[in-house]
Length: 315
Image (tube, rainbow, N blue to C red):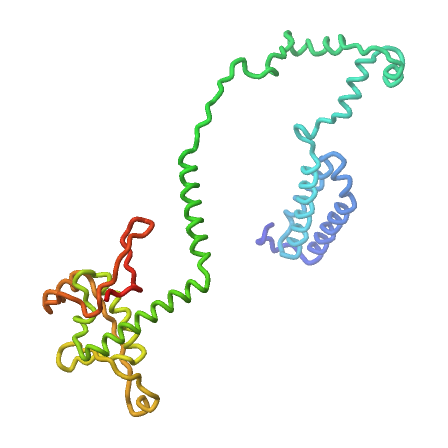
């Protein structure tokens, strides 16, 4: 394509477009010949298109040239698709027919000789095969290896151990899942009873320092439990904490009514954190030797660990 060629007039471009359309029409009509015939026909039309392309100066003729290029590329792809390469070129039926012709090379048709029971001439096949190999291959390779080593199977003890651990975990999950609603309700009822006992103790002793009520100098765990049970009393409004004196004083009270809240009474909540170092410091500062909430008995569980029975108060 030569954009700088300005000598080409309108008539020349019309003739060029006519030649391109003629080429496209011929190519479409001879598409079957392109696919089944010799490739020389397609090459001739490609040379013809190259000659026309040397005269192209505008996009109108360039579009026609691109159409023929697409058509020729499609035809070439189809020819390549139908080519028979390697194993695709082997026709087993044709091979068998030629083999039968050699085996029954005597007079008459191979089908007739085979049907009449004539013996095949295998020596003729051997004679042809001898041209390509002087020694016939032995059949020892089909017997497998001469010596085989029996491999001892290693026992997967690690997998068995993991399986045992997994089984134990599933059994534990099954035991947890078997806890019914009655067990949960029983636990809630026992917790409620203990909260009520703590409320009776607080009502009996009157106003008292919070730490002297809940801190157990013999057990950090029971001190945390005592704080947990007292928190229920604070939440339900059955006890309140007064720190105006600088010390957290707790006292039992009657739960507030709706009118008290309308009069301006508000609830306040706080987070009480306690670790072992703080627990020991409180014991030393306040000189706590005995907890107001009695010590609860402990028992040894099935796992050999000490378990606190939160439901039993020592009298």
